[in-house]
Image 1 (cartoon, rainbow, N blue to C red):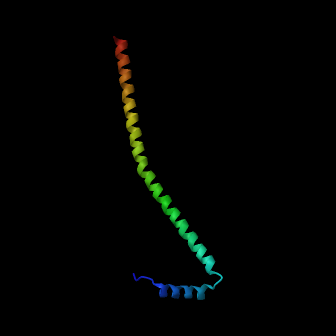
Image 2 (image 1 turned 90 degrees about the vertical axis):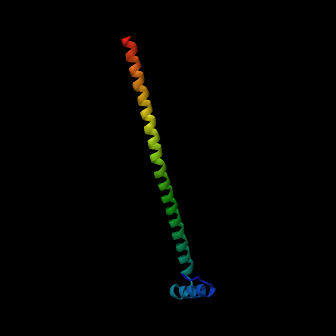
Image 3 (image 1 turned 180 degrees about the vertical axis):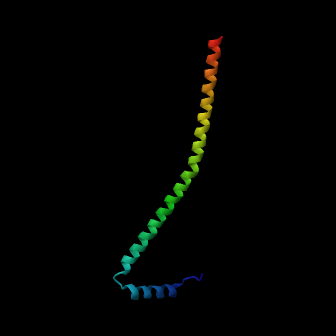
Length: 87
């Protein structure tokens, strides 16, 4: 892709002025800036969603292992109580 220098940019600006007129250029620039801003926000939101999805399974697996450990402890307690009652 060739680099755009000053002469190329001036030609593009001249064509834009001829096509849209001098009065519409500020509105077009504002709309272009707003579009770029919204695009960046959408990309950031997508990245944050991906990070949350990566963290969520880790949290769920940690919770599952904690639940399993507490269930094991509860079963042991019940078994000990039953043994004490039988003795």
